[in-house]
Image (cartoon, rainbow, N blue to C red):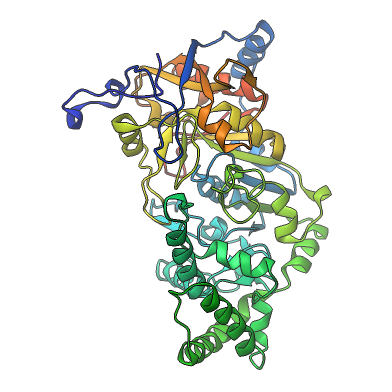
Length: 498
């Protein structure tokens, strides 16, 4: 079944998800028109005897208890995204945080949107505060690699406090972290407008412009708030630079005066949170405290490894942990990759396994695929094994968390994008950097049977339908990495330990 393009019944409003998928010959993929790649479809390959025996053994063996599985994680562990973000990292961090002393963010800013639920089922949307905040005994660190928008941070803290979550003495902000100002957000929008049809599709949260300030060395750091005698001159330099670059940016003495007064108040409020987090992190390691690193965004949005220029402005892959927290590579242990059972991305850029039209819409609504940060609808498609392998190579994951498996429950058949080929049939060995090649390549799919039943109440792997187990185990076989956690709903308890 070729599901590169979709055909729906004319009465699409009443069409169930599994009826949305019907084969049509697809047109070539275009970044501007977002047409899908041509696809070559083959049936799923049966696992080899050794793989089948290993899978059978893993299912029949006595399952490891959740506490034992989590307790066995390394002293310094990490949770990172394997796709284009929005994989559900926050939920796993929230669950694991109860077994860790420190949860740390190492990169990105308020463009991250992590949705988590407390024990009563109350929903929290976090953007800067690490997802460990709901666990009373966890200390949360915002590392030097993060760009910090203080109005947003204080709003987030106020919201948590209003809902009974104490933040006092539980959040540390690196004195080396760069400050993201409101004008960075204005510049972000001006830059996107300037790009016109080639726009990146950013969150317009000012992330790129703030990192630009950092890299050209006229940025302002948290530690600068302690020196209000020089702060106005530094801010004036930043604002003047933006005004000279963008005609639509109006800057004058009144703006500078107002911003300085505002940041005097922010500095006073932030002071109890400011710390030398490089020293704190390394001292915590020496004290044998357990540390969990929470990544924002994902590897396919990495400034170096992602689909450049349709990427974020930081390093959400494993290397960003060391540079964003100031800890040595040798202390890193288990890294858990979080991957949806299908693929989504927000904004512009290539998406080889994308499902367009009403079929994509139905998957979007079934999975509630709307951005936590922006509310934008996410583009949806099949799980891209080529991209996932690429992410696993870069990060060296010890295990995977497969999320939102329940969203696929209505489908009679499910596809896995297992290989890329050029138009002449020549195999493409890895995820290409060349966007033109990504526009033209063909995706080879394997088709697996669906399970056609609700799995949201299942809590033991052996109770999953055989077709769902086959899907999970085929991904494991293709990756060569075990899937230890399977999400089957948004709540804390909607997790299967495998």
